[in-house]
Length: 278
Image (cartoon, rainbow, N blue to C red; front, side):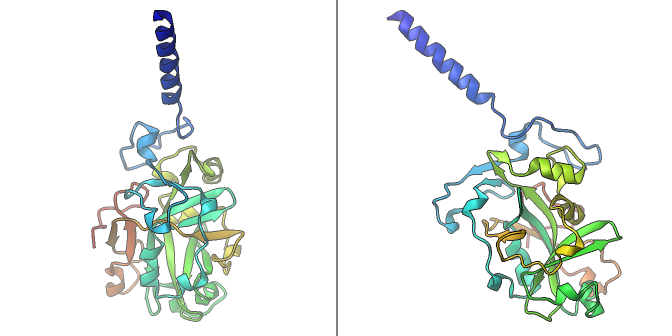
């Protein structure tokens, strides 16, 4: 009888050890000295996962601010055309927590900026040109342009066709479903083998991670295939602040609080000290 009890305890001990040795993400973490943030030592801290039952209703799919939901993208729905037919300033905060999907890469939107009609910082101020024509398309289309001829910037066109407004996707976080979806693809495209926020904390990094070019302009984000925007949980709290890099605009537009970010997450871009609760 004593020998049986000892054998049972030994088997239980081995099972516990085997479970604790598993890691949710690859161990190939490389420290980026240019990162301006202290980074947690454990992968589970850097990519906090909230377990979600896919059978729950959408209203129940709530995660802690800044967490990465453990919810299969296949269970999510593509946002409809009507979702985007609103003012850019209303659409921008509604995009927080939603998902971008292209092939094996799925990203959760964590930071955006609104650019409105008659906004001196918006490309629409130039009128319809070969470059800006997509931003005057119907809401829900993609507007992709090159910044300084180098960085591919993804924007979601807002409002009705002809308005000339959009929302810039500034930062995202990778999505976790036991393993990080498309992490190796993102790292390869970005040329950085890291799982830190530096991987996706900037608009040019998002375009690069998704493998976008200006040819994606006018692509409808509400249709299956290619690049899609999927429904996702609304963040519990958010931060607002002035937009970045628009010093050329009129003072009222430079100071406008049209930048929105998920509160409590490290997956947002600099500067962070200009963001505050609404």
